[in-house]
Image (tube, rainbow, N blue to C red):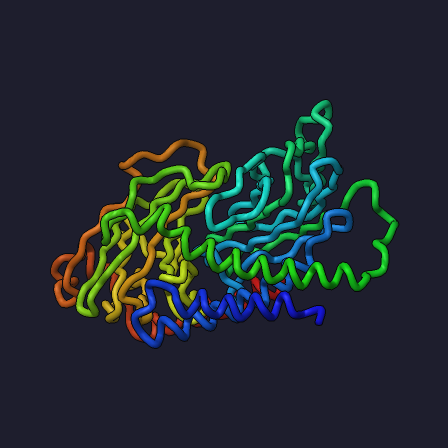
Length: 389
C-alpha cells in the first residue's frame, strides 16, 4: 500500500502524544490529539510542497496547523530550494509591520536547530512606489548586492514571516517564487515512485515535528526558574532583527502573574501564552496574546499584562484557558538597536483578589463586560480577514 509508511507514522505519532511527559489532565491529552490532527494535516501539505524545481510558498503554520510556539501575529510561509539554482521572488508589500526572509540549511529536528545562512527584512531591497518588488536568491557570489542574495552551501529552505501589530487595519501582501530557468516549463507527470516517497516523507515530517517541539522547550525554557522571564536576547535561529524574552509559568487558579515591560519604540512588540505542547493557545476566540497596538498602555508608559485563570477585569488580561502550566514569550521585531535589561520585563506573582490594590493604574486598566466582548469580536473578525486575504 502506498500509504502504509504514513499510516505507520500516524500510529507512532499517537504514542508520542499519549506518552508526553507533561500530561496530567484529560484536557492535556485531548489537546494533544487536536495538535496531532493539525500536525497530520500539515505534514501531508509540507510533503507535497517539496518542489525545489517548481517551488511555491506554503503556509508553514497557522491557527489549525500549529507548531513551535507559533506567533499569533505572524503569517509563516516557506519554500524549498536547491543551493545550486537561482530563484526569483516577486510580490507586493502589504501594510503589515514587518516582512522578513530567512534561508535555512535544513529543518528543525529533535537534536538541533538548523543554521540560518541568510536573514534580512524588506529594508534590504528596493520596493517600487506601487509596493511591488523582485528579489533573487542564487549561488553566484559575483551578483551579490541589493536584490540578489547568495545561497550558501546547504541552503534548503526559504522562510518568510509577515507580522501584524494592528490586526484590524494592516493588510497582508502577495508573494510568489519560481526557479529562474524553469519559467514556462512544466514538471513531469507524477509517478508511483514519487507518491510512495511523498507518503514516506510525510510520515517522517510528522514524527520529527512532534518530537522536535516537545524537546525544544527543554533547550530554551524549562531550565529557567519558573514564574520568571529572561532579559531580552537575540531569538535563537538567526532572525535578523528580533529579540525575545521567554519564560514558563505555574499558577494556581487564584494567582496572577503581572508582567511589566516598557512600551517599546520598536515597530513590533507582542506577548503570547503557549501550552505545554509548545503551541499558541486559542488566540482567535480568546485574548491569549497582545501586541503593543492592541494593549492598553499605562500613563507611565508601561505595559502591564495580567496572566491568570480568573477574569481580573482589566484590558491586558491574558487568558490561561485552564492551563496551570505554560509558556510566555515577548518578541520585539524590526529593531534598530540591541535591547538591554531595561527594555525587558519584570514579573510579580500576586493573588487575583489583590490586583485592585497591587496593580498600578488599576482604574485605568479596567474594562467592562461589553468592552471585553467587543475586544474578542474584533479578534475573530481580524483573523478571519487575515486568513482569507
